[in-house]
Length: 268
Image 1 (tube, rainbow, N blue to C red):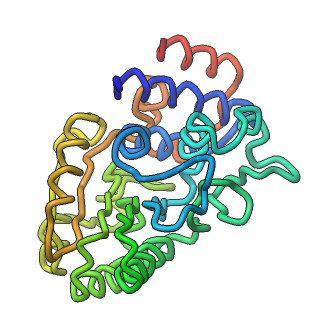
Image 2 (image 1 turned 45 degrees about the vertical axis):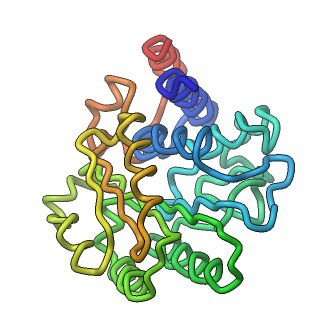
């Protein structure tokens, strides 16, 4: 698997999906494409033909507004027809703006109310330990989302419970809906905070580098007594120059058909 080429393809699909509606959560979707690719095309024990397979690995995207990137991956993996992507957030769609487990095959938890998805992931990891199904539970949180107290309550429990079957990622793209994270409510130093909560911590300098992500996940799987937090230092809107340059304004950004064409050209 060529991770970088697959990530380009998923970014193109994400752009087309949001472009079909004309507006969407483009910045935070593009910043997590690389980790999604490494998880779904290498590490996760899943079966698109059997989305509810017992003992499957699960991914819970707590920053649920990044659903469009996940939808692009799920469609590519065969969970549903790719034509669904052009129904994003429209009436009667199965692909709402935020992830919904009751609507979308392959979505393991309804998320979007920031902080709650992470708590659910911790609960799923604990349940997996109880039933001994040997699943690995993955979850992605945002750096802005890390301002939520619920993140730290759940993190404290996970560390205390020694949930070594839980591998979390912080999409540390340094921006949130209305500003830069450091200016609004700085969450640094994330690494020291997670270590203090009893977690194994791996920080990646380039969180959009699939090879670094792959190496970190392999290392995280060797943890015997702690959950692991992988801090991904990413770029919001990664892969398309004019979206990257928009900064935090790309959180929920309008996208004209001319801009869609420009973005797709850049991603060739």
